Amino acid sequence: VKEEERLRRGAELLEWIKSEGGDVDSVRIAGGPGGVGVFCARDVRRGVPFFQCPVRCVMRASDVKGARRGDADDAAFVAALDALVVDDEPIDDRVRLQLHLLNERARGSRSRWAPYIRSLPGRELVGNLPVSWACEEDPDELLCGLFDTHMFRKAHEDKSWLNKLSGALLEDPRNFPADAFGPDLLLWAHAMYWSRAIRLKLPGGGFSSASNDGKTDCLVPLLDSCNHAWRSRHDTGRGAIGYSLVAGAASKEGDEVCINYGMKDNGELLSSHGFVCREHARFDFTYVRIGGLTPCSPRRASPPIAKQSERRARVRDIVGRPAGETSRGDAATTTAPFHAEIHFVEDEKGGVVGAFAPSAVAVARALYAPTDADLEAARAASAAGVVDDSTRGPDAFFNQKRQGGPDASDPCTRRAMRFLRAAAHDEWCRLQRCRELSGFWKGRGLGGPGSTAEAWESTPGSADGGARAAIDLYCSTQMRLLRDVMAEWNDDGADAE
Image (cartoon, rainbow, N blue to C red; front, side, top):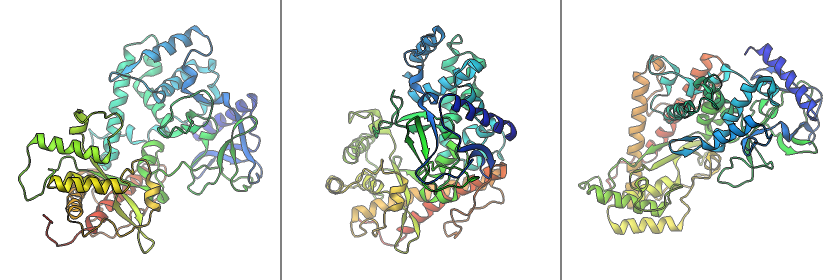
């Protein structure tokens, strides 16, 4: 969709919201440095809403639960959604909302959300997301620039899931016709959801995170047209009409109205929104898989597989289980790999440096304890401190002050850190080999472990060169995090036994 057409459709969106009882006179849809966005049509004082929109303008999964409109087609569609199964599991509300969007799109002008759906971007957004990038045919393709990174694996997981969903929909062509729910349209709906869904506290329910904050994932007309700005202080609220965006600072006519998409790392920004931000590189993280390493001293013979499985189950008892694990005999408990996360933290000089998360050290300390006595010591150390950092988020890690790192005088901790450093070194070498072999990276070397290149040295634009710059930024940061933890414990001491 060309920008001129999107601007025309944006004006229609504002008129629709007004016809529904909304107040949008203080804003307009226009083009800017970040593309089409929301701008002030007049001065707005701090604490005053830029706009207010009725809740009935919002799209959410609960719209297609119980056939609210009483229409026969609605009832059939809701029943089909209730019966839909992918990988032997019913669909969740996130997928339900995406299919709801496609169903309303197929209704065309008969849909009460027609002006909103027409205002949404087309392939110009989908083409910016890694899930849409090709790799198999040409080594110069964009996705090859991410090869063997976590984002590369996520893109393939998303593609695999969409293929499975497409296959499931083909089994019910009456309710999910191919011309309305085909693979390309599923990809479009996936992109719309992950790039634009906003959590609002609204009645009626919907997908909610484990935080139980009472908020619902919604597609929110006009609010989801606001571009991202790291320093934005504007915030959502509930007004007399419905949901609103309240000015956190005074804004002048012509100023762009941006919102902060949150403390997201660049991997999430690129995979969900199609861009990266230099300011967000500090929230980037990576991880190394340590489940494949032998859980014993490097100078001893590997224990039997049964013994390794027992050790892994005991380690999960110490550091906690992923959601859904209920028994020490679960296959996931004894075979799933452990992930050691690496985040940026602030060092003593006010700079930033990559460091293993506390839980990573706790896992490695228990996993590689050479004796049962050492394992029990690891259990006691875990019980005495907080090692479950899975819900803290990258901002919490960046904002923590570095306190000298793990206890270097403890033999078990020293052994654990050597295993972690070895895993980080293997991951760094794997990424470096991918850079050297990929046609995408010819002439774009990232340097070795001693490289002084900064992790956030570029801010991409919106064209193909911008996508390549985004990949460069993401991969450079991944390798810097690994390089930092490799250097942290690069001592010449012997392994403690």
